[in-house]
Image (tube, one colour):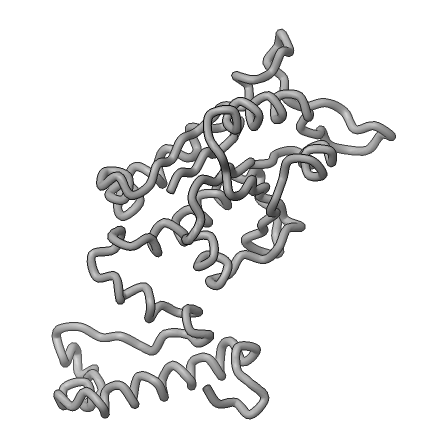
Length: 229
């Protein structure tokens, strides 16, 4: 899998991809992540990639030409499954979408700024628009990192225990149950006895009950009409 991320601030992205699971995934050769500075593709002598809106209005708009030049240069080198634009008015990112994207090959992610990008980019280049929440960030870099993190960890071989990702919150339409580790008692706070029972069936039943309870309390929209999974 390969991600080509188009940005005007590549330095914002270096940190998230240089540590932990994302770095190991790259070191293993399971994923490639490349950053492309959009200013390298502008013909403007001042390296500008934005301009005033037609019709007036507050805020600048990212211009079409450098984006076209960058995307076209990348597409001349390889095929892409998706050209993604990170935008607050895109489709809400969730675990099922992360699962689908993890089966893709090459993807371009365009990070927006200012008031957004010229609509013609969205009309003619973008294949998928994604939002990570109903709020506005100063740019799409952090959102792009979130999407990449959620997708890359699902690639076989990225996480040492590949079954772990299958039991994450949201993966099966429910939130994950509480988890505990040593010591079994701390300051008088004890873990549930069932977790020390050694009875796998009882433990599994307890975890399902706790997951259902947590989901009912925090994300009732995940549950069916009768409240049961």
